Each structure stands twice: as C-alpha cells, then as structure tokens.
Amino acid sequence: MAITKPQLPPKAGYVEVEVNGQRRYRSIETGLLLGEQTAETIRTQRDALLSACDWTQMPDSPLSEEEKAAYQAYRQALRDVPQQEGFPETINWPEEPKTGSFVE
Image (tube, rainbow, N blue to C red):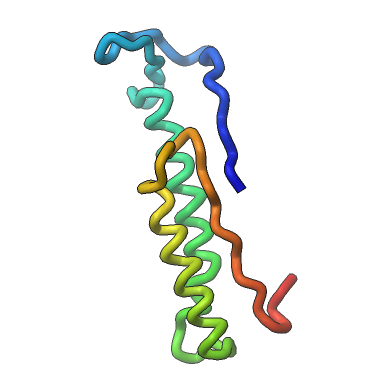
C-alpha cells in the first residue's frame, strides 16, 4: 500500500531555509530538515515493526520453516524500506505474513 504524504506548510517550531536553491523547513528543536525528520520517524516505525517480530527468528519459535521463511522475507522488506524510490514521501509497507494460529 503506497502512502503519499502531501507537502504541507510547517507548523510552529520550524524556520524556512534555502537548501540547494529550494525552500525547505528546519526544526528549531532538532535542527533537522522537514524531510529528514520524516525519514527518522519512518525508520523508528520500521524498527518497531522489526522488533515486534524478532521472536519469529528464534531457534525455539513455534513457527514452521515455511512461516519462518515468510517472516525472513517480510523482515528484509522492512529493512529495505529506506531504499525504496520516493522514500520518505512514499512508502510501500510490506504485509506481515499470516501464520497459523498466531494471527490476531
């Protein structure tokens, strides 16, 4: 599923700066450009998704080999999110595998 974030004017807490001839917005608090903050936020979300399925790769995981392989592919797709074309404005989040009785 592709999610495209529209470029909105910044809220309070940003200053307008020029970077390579383009108008950008820098956070007063962090010093990061608006797109950099978005990328950092997305990486944090991605890291949380990876952590939530760490258990699937443990030796004592109750998953079948096929289910473990599906999670390996999912985890690799999560790690590849920052390399997607259009990152961080457009993200194609991978779908978590559906596995036996562990589906909520």
